[in-house]
Length: 95
Image 1: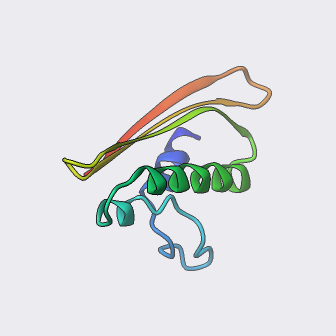
Image 2: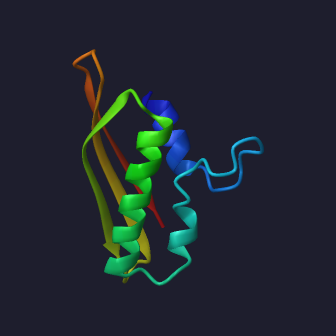
């Protein structure tokens, strides 16, 4: 599941031919001006997609951290897997 989540974050829409809405679409935000409005929209979009594509993943916390001076976005996802008690964390930086 961890590698599927990482793949989701690294995929841009519409890279998947049969599923054009799949993907975190994070790289496109790096090329836009980073504002608190953008990061809040991004966070909501990621949460909605995770609920749609990863039904067995419970999002414990999702932080979208922006560093406008470096034009960088960091994603920190803490999650657990339903019915297993397993928890994990993913941290990704997009520069």
